[in-house]
Length: 264
Image: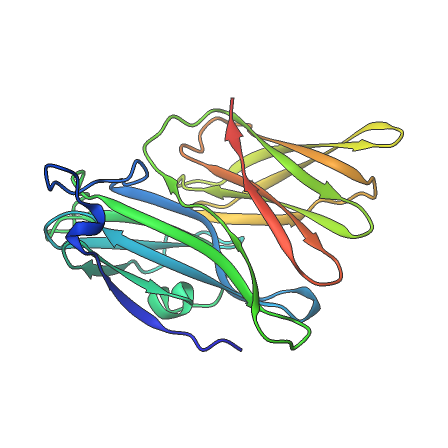
């Protein structure tokens, strides 16, 4: 198994310098960012998943960051908030963010928000976050398997319906669908799965009740096989900046790929 490490990243000025020597801020930098799914948890077929996450502070001053954990299937409102401080133009990175920084296990989502020294939201924070989920090879061989799960900038308009494309389901692959609910109350989401089979399009549906400030991920039942499109709808319209995703998982190796739901 790969040894886990906790590292502090120092950004060199030349790496980000423009002609004017000002810091180049990536478009994804923002004061508040979601990582829809992360974890420190065992999976099927001998896998054990962890989240390799880096959090970069692109400001020229130190930044306090509140880290909120959205647990799987239970309300996260009472989960203690972890506050970290990242030095100017530097960052932190660890291959087990959930274990090392949040201090927990299991599957969940993460919200990162810049805050002032007084604990108030800091709109001037410039955070950049990268995330991937990885596991040691379940066959005991050398190396790891992983997939990138992009962080999402908060503060954008969230449509009531989002779609996921590029999934598959069949004898080789199972299909999971997940939703992150940042609202302070339980929200219900309607899932429509359209499978393009050799005999035509088969449509399957299910509803997910997602507790406040939590995530929920479920196996989509059914046996139809083929290319998949997933629609996720916020039925009540009160979920705010909710996020959704879908994953196709190899039933033999545990290898997987995921796509974040996008709005029209």
